[in-house]
Length: 406
Ligand code: LLP
Image 1 (tube, rainbow, N blue to C red):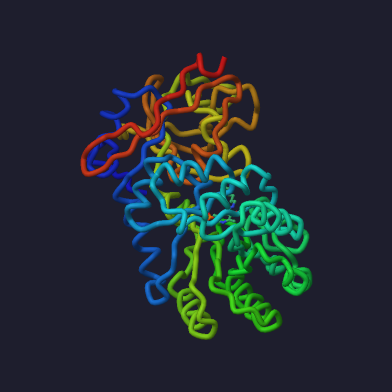
Image 2 (cartoon, rainbow, N blue to C red):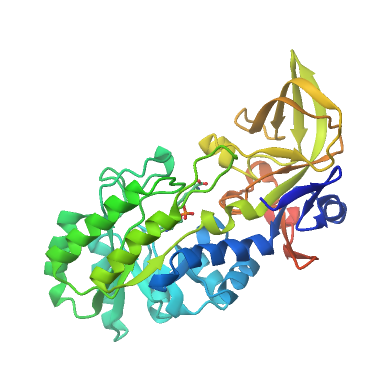
């Protein structure tokens, strides 16, 4: 992450977190623009040789200011709902750079996407393609679609975020894919322009991607369709802890270059976590500290409604103190939220720099699926979001007012 200590104080890109915390109600999300830019450019440069269209996956972070910054860097958007589509458009991302994914798009969502002429609607069922054809006929349009292939590939990631196996609800298995390509020939208001895939998230090895490329090759060969685009999805894993395995994107890029030469299709990617995951921290204040049995409970004012990943996936997000004391507390220490559920817990430590009530801590690497997964559970308002850009602090989402949710 872009957090580092200067002396005993925690900084994000040379800006003191304590300084930001004094001016904002905790909990709040803080992001580093520099890191977002750097991640986007790093990702693009890996695949530079194939000049891909990178469609940032909006579900990972849908803050309109962040989308606008990514848009300025050249990013498109991968959206999955009317709301995400409208946010991407508000961020001035061109519809020509927007792909619309999702298994259950509604009539209204499809109408909007067709009317706005998004680059691709990635279709996940035969019925959806028929509906797009019907709506497009009424609008006197021919709509470009991609068909999402379910390549039956195990992404070797958490089962809860795995999407590429036949037993998952996503995409069309290759048999159905090929059958549909044949039967859709008389659907005059859709054009099958792309194959799309997305096999899962937080993937840390190249092997499942390689198997997916092979599954796509097979479809291209058997369908005998000249696809304009191949949308390879997202899923690139990041290091949450220093010890975590790092995905070798360079190695994957060679495979993609070879694939692109053979097929001559324009390549699309839909990364989310890789672009924003390590760019944000959730800053929270310690409300109380108490000792139950032999364990210290450090009770924060951030809860699972603000940041859900530990409760939902047992995800590990390191916690660091905003002022790092030279003394340490040893013994069992558990950081928990204020919510009335035992899953409202963040992380346990065996020792930690000494902290006291009223101090600030930062939960790290929460830029992806942090604020987007937050909720109003326990009638708690959504936290604010702040970005640090070139030494300036900008509020990019105000804290929700309690009156808005009553
Ligand atoms: N494209 C499609 C069609 C997707 O479904 C997803 C994520 C992405 C792209 C972006 O994947 P990424 O590059 O971020 O891995 N809430 C979970 C992750 C769910 C991912 C859902 N789909 C988590 O917090 O780990």
